[in-house]
Image 1 (cartoon, rainbow, N blue to C red):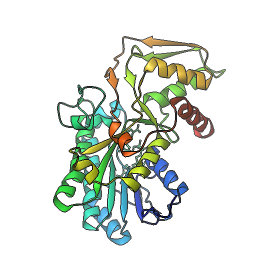
Image 2: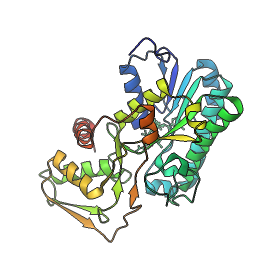
Image 3: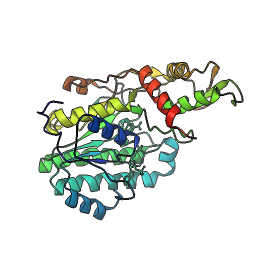
Length: 324
Ligand SMILES: NC(=O)c1ccc[n+]([C@@H]2O[C@H](COP(=O)([O-])OP(=O)(O)OC[C@H]3O[C@@H](n4cnc5c(N)ncnc54)[C@H](OP(=O)(O)O)[C@@H]3O)[C@@H](O)[C@H]2O)c1
């Protein structure tokens, strides 16, 4: 790291450092020589509580903030706990962004996800499609809260000139992913299913997957996402988005594949040789979800981990760390 990096010694607060995304950002910054990172466990600082957040900012005075804290979950949780998803995420963002403004934070990066884009938006998803049509109903409360976070950052920039902006990652996977089959995303769920189906205790040598396997999805290794966040911290300013007429920046690979293709790669990495069956009576979901990443490419960042390498690393992490 060159000594010209003015952020290296800044006091940086990573909100949500214990999660999959926050922990990857923490590892990345620490291994890149950042020395002044501050973190708080959820039980020490509840970000939903405004007084706790304000006291923390005024006593610790962070200079930069990365918001990787959120109440997150799969479709079922999003659809069931709709009130909690909208309320908690709105409070976390509003408390952090307002306290950051009041205490003079120099730079803030807020993380959302691709669910902020309309359900039927054209593919690949361009930043400009924000608020151009209806959202997917199942995660609408979560998406509305994330859109509010984007607009909080933009509004504080437009009224107060703060250097606060938002980044929207595509589907992520990697170390510390959620491998609980009831609540996990597709990629970690497939790793676990194939792994369990190849053990001697498995009832049969086949795995059944929901839907036709034809929908296409994009996946980014979480350590590449962490690299992208460091790139944004060091090289991108709020005006680079807002003065170009966009409110948030996409982060992804710009490459997608079908769930069938994904299942094949994962079965090879895990060493599962049985049959993969598709239950096409179950719903497929959106046919395609791919981010347009030309803006972040033009700014100078591109992912570096291939899907196969990322899955191998994630499977090794699973073997070493996952206890069911
Ligand atoms: N995972 C993905 O595929 C993906 C894709 C795109 C975008 N993202 C975005 O990345 C961000 C982080 O996601 P993740 O997958 O890392 O989620 P995660 O593993 O569940 O981590 C969430 C973090 O937020 C903390 N947190 C939640 N509520 C809190 C509260 N009230 N006070 C303090 N801390 C609180 C959690 O702490 P506790 O666990 O102790 O509660 C945890 O550290 C989210 O904004 C999400 O939208 C994720």
